Amino acid sequence: MNLKILIVTDGSPEAEKALAFSATIVQRSTDLPTILAFVNGSGESDPSQTADIIDRAIQMIGIDNAHTRVLSGELTEGIVQEAESGGYDLIILGDQIPEGFFSRIRGSSPGIRVAECAPCSVLIIRGDYPKIHRILLCDSGAGRSSLLSRLVLQLSDLLEGEEDVTVLHVMSQISAGPGVRGKQLRADAIELVEEHSPEGEILENDLQMLSKPGIHPLPKVRHGLVVDEILAEARGGEYDLVVVGAHPVRSPQSLLLDNIAHQILKRISRPILVVRERE
Image (cartoon, rainbow, N blue to C red; front, side, top):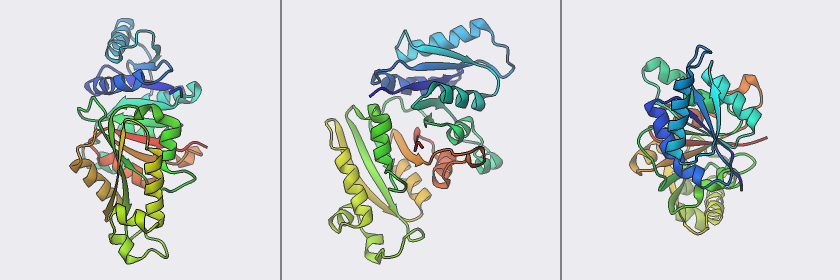
């Protein structure tokens, strides 16, 4: 399938890391990517500065005939407007973890603001992870389709290498519904699958969807608070990419991500893909 990608860059170190990470992904898409060069916030761009930013981006992603756009003004609004008008499937941008108490509380980094408002999936690059080898998929199975269903349907070009994919489901007593036995809250992934529990069926379905050449899936269950367990697994598993899901943006009054995705975005130090469920 075609994967329409919008890559945001301003020439900063964070943007350079995003371009390095993007290089492999854009080579797997049959559609040419678009480079969105953000030059400043004053509305007046320096042509030489703009040309340097675009030339550097083209050099790093390795596609000479990529589409280009120039953005000046408010960053988040400009990216979202371009994503809406261009019908993109994926936005890629570099970002830092919010620093300071109030920033962490508000989650006010540019990457988080874009993920909150974008109509499509958003890949936020943090840290030095230029290649995708190990992926952590955090699948709750909630909503009309599982996270993996959305990933395979919308962004399947990300999964065409020799990746190890861990499918994580967190069993939390706080969120356990009626009929969930105590044994299931302590079970591992294999036990849940063998018992045909609701969580086991989610994991089994995910593994079946990932049964394609070059993909090495592994189911995993952790027990505890969802956000804490996802962050602990991401830190301890040496993952190059963490994938979480979010519901559609339905109105200006409901721009915030699902709480779990938002909390992870505020605290995680690795590249994270927010898969947006479309209307």
